[in-house]
Amino acid sequence: MGSAGHRFGQRLAERLAAVRSRFVRARHFRGHGVHSPFVYALVREVFMRSALMPGDRALFRALRESGVAERPAVQLQNLAIHEGYRAFGLNRAEGELYVLTRELPHAEVLALVGRAAETGAAVAVLEPCRGRERQLLCRQLVAAHGSTSVDNRACLLLFNNRLPKQHFVL
Image 1 (cartoon, rainbow, N blue to C red):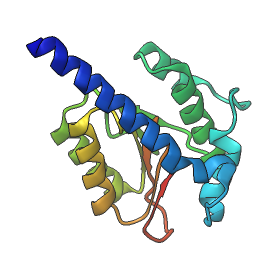
Image 2 (tube, rainbow, N blue to C red):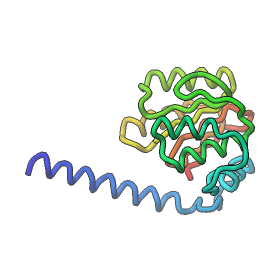
Image 3 (cartoon, helix red, strand yellow):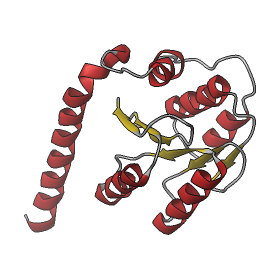
Image 4 (tube, rainbow, N blue to C red):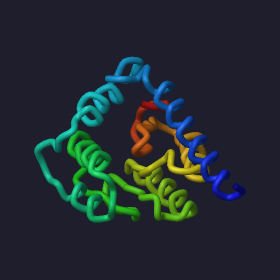
């Protein structure tokens, strides 16, 4: 029963953590409990939309080609349209929005987040809740970040704008 029992226990622990996460985030459903006009607009105009907003689809296509699920790809494309980001970098420091996938090593994630802070670009770290190491990395990023950050389970958004340091878990 050794290794099979361990996998079962691990899966059970992951499922229980997911249920707990849903209960904790339930209070933010439909934007209730969000006291920032900036984040409230993101929730209503970006995260609650299931279809793409009118505009360029380059980010959506690039994300889908790299294996990102449709819903997070739609959300990030809508974020780019909503915020007026004209260019993006997928796993690289380019444009106004850096999108960092799970395949990127932790050291490179830290370097790109630091570069984004210098240039004022926004960062989207995909799958922030996927695995313990990824969660610890994202907690480290939020703790060190000087402006607004939003975690919606599909991605961790780090905005380098003039808003105060706030962290929202949706």
